[in-house]
Length: 141
Image (cartoon, rainbow, N blue to C red):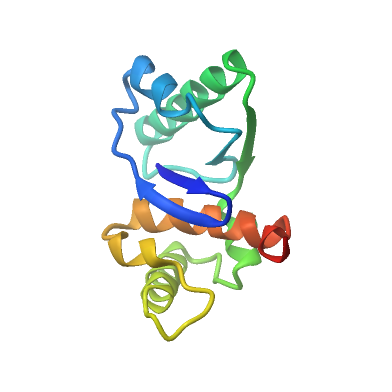
């Protein structure tokens, strides 16, 4: 999970997605929850079900706390950032390249937290937020 303040990625939070209390506490002071959903099929049925349950925990907590909740598909946010969407191996390689580029100080606008995105899940979480900033024109405000 990535915490954003405006258009700035502030920190990664490691939470136990199976723990409803941790999920609920992780979104206590937020205005918007954006999750990757719809369109992702796990490597097997159990993985897909597990991902669906995680999304539902966040959606339920957001609904209960009256927080706006949005799901974006992998293709949606990757298209916004001009990343390949298929095959998945190319898409993940594109995410790695983009995070590597955004972590370098010579690129503007810089996304400093990109250097701390050391695995594919963190890269995806960070870039989903980055895509939202671009798609919803928050960068220009």
